[in-house]
Image 1 (cartoon, rainbow, N blue to C red):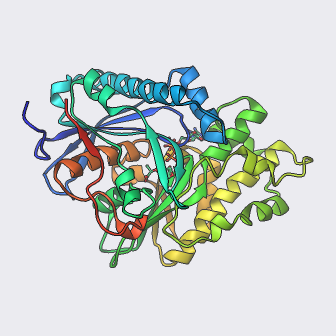
Image 2 (cartoon, protein in one colour; image 1 turned 90 degrees about the vertical axis):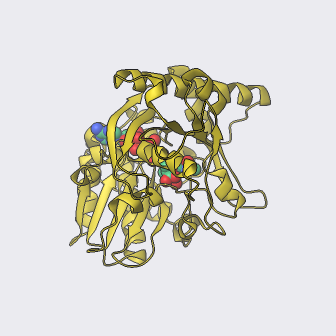
Image 3 (cartoon, rainbow, N blue to C red; image 1 turned 45 degrees about the vertical axis):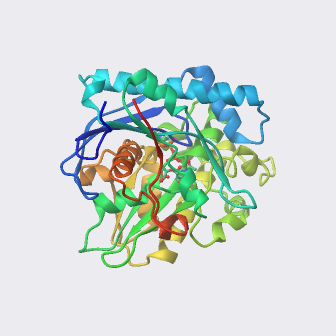
Length: 376
Ligand SMILES: Nc1ncnc2c1ncn2[C@@H]1O[C@H](COP(=O)(O)OP(=O)(O)OP(=O)(O)O)[C@@H](O)[C@H]1O
Ligand SMILES: CC(=O)N[C@H]1[C@@H]2OC[C@@H](O2)[C@@H](O)[C@@H]1O[C@H](C)C(=O)O
């Protein structure tokens, strides 16, 4: 079989994000071979995790849960199988066969993200050999570690894709991903792209909501709307020194988890008020970061699951008078599949031999081709 090239058109992006809410699959067509080719989402769907595997992943992501080497090895394969199943379903559900797909870009599942310290690392599992074997399609995977090896955070990676498809020379824009963690991409009309994580978003909202209502997420923001933010709690949470760090910066659920919230509670708080406080924590940290880094932003383009939370979206718009706050759909990008599309794009950049990272975003010492190729 000949090696895949960036000249072929259809790529499949796969990711499970920090919310572990499902495996997003996006079949993306690119209209030419350049990095700025227009991507079209041909098919996007989120496939559920096997419930026991999801439960274990959430538990492992929350705090310092111990894991044996045996379990780690098995998890890598189990996640790889779940990703392969999602890929095969997506290809079939789109009415295609694997031969139609040039390559799969698989992010895998982040289990730990520790880009600081004497031995910086980031760990995504989901054995790409298993995906290539089961799908019969070349896979590009392990996108973050080369950037970390080059002194970067290995995250966020999606700003390069945002820049390729959403930059407008006529206005200062920003793109906000409201995932488990929130991250911003700054797209000034002129000047270089920047991007960084701003802190927790849906991850904490989901965890608190599950504990107090039994529901996996706060559908429509109804639970938060029953309460009011508690100013003293909000102030205590904002004291976390991570928020004051300058970019480049990235974080994960191993930092912002339920234990982190509990450490700031007195115990008398009404659960709905805590939910509202966590929602406003996301808004405050996003808005503060945007105002500090690109104060003249005209348009904030929002993607990620948080666009479906009207309470969160309204609070953001209210905190940003003069800024157009809109979901990415207004720009032809389904907000639920922007990240998966980005990993389809990153696979394509790998095959083209082009760097996928932006050193100004991740802090890496230079541009690097990201990921490794696992042949079909
Ligand atoms: N109808 C809704 N109402 C409120 N929140 C919603 C709704 N639909 C989705 N969400 C939120 O979006 C989350 C999923 O978002 P998304 O898939 O963007 O996260 P992720 O990709 O896992 O995170 P990350 O970008 O940090 O990796 C859900 O866990 C939930 O909190
Ligand atoms: C280590 C890791 O998985 N980070 C995620 C997480 O989820 C959102 C934010 O934190 C972002 O930094 C990143 O994901 C997206 C896909 C990115 O790399 O741009």
